[in-house]
Amino acid sequence: MPGPKKLDPSSSPRALLGAELRHRREAAGLSQEDLGAPLFVSGSFIGQLESGTRRMQSDQAEKLDEVLGAGGFFVRNCAAVSKSKYPDHFAEAAEAERQATTIKEYAPLLIPGLLQTEAYARAVFRAYQPTATEDVIDELVAARLERGQLLADPTTPLFWAVLDEAALRRLAGGLRVMAEALRHIEHLARRHRVIVQVLPFSAGAHMALEGPLKLMSFADAPPLAYLQGLGTGQLRDDPAPVRQHELTYDLVAASALSPEASLALIASAAEDYDHEDQHL
Image (cartoon, rainbow, N blue to C red; front, side, top):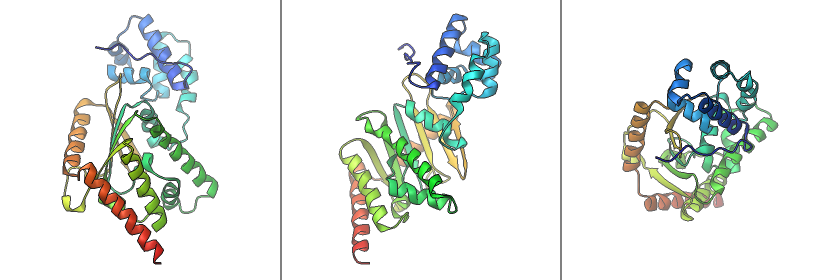
């Protein structure tokens, strides 16, 4: 089995915290399970803190200072790690995305955030917050586009999305915005940066009808599942539920069109939007 990933403490506050946690745990002669017991968390959760895939909470920092005799180090640094440009319910999932080697996402209504164009993201955020100032919308759009830079790396993470046909047909931002958004997805897929499938309306009922699903796997930590609702989100690491969510995704993908047929449908929908726009 490969050893734990070498962390670069200078790369981010979270990496610093994770590296220090691993150092102090090993110096104390504790396993991840040993350290997790007084925090009432699993050993895998401690591993996720050490690898930077989970965000340390203030009460956990207090207990770690106590158990490891850290003299307040974790409490002092936990605040910096907890700061995020994302909503509280999504902040931890956004951080986990940055560490993931593979991201799989089922999107029932909207184009996934990692695949959104600026104009599409702006239309979505304006719909979410119709009375927000332009400055607020600008900040939200900038944060979403920054997330999208994960795909600037030519190979990592592997991103595999299953888009419900509703995400292609829902007119967000107008005809031109939709045409541009779909061509952006087509471009990423045709240069083999992402895998995209479309779940057509003809597929009927399926296991993920209750909402979106994101699965993330890591080089040195257990997989995570992120479930999102209206203004809420839950990051799950319990092995049994995660396996169930993985099965759900696999069955949805099996019911979807092939990548080739999906690209053809995406390209056709983009052409339809362009054609409608030209004849207005």
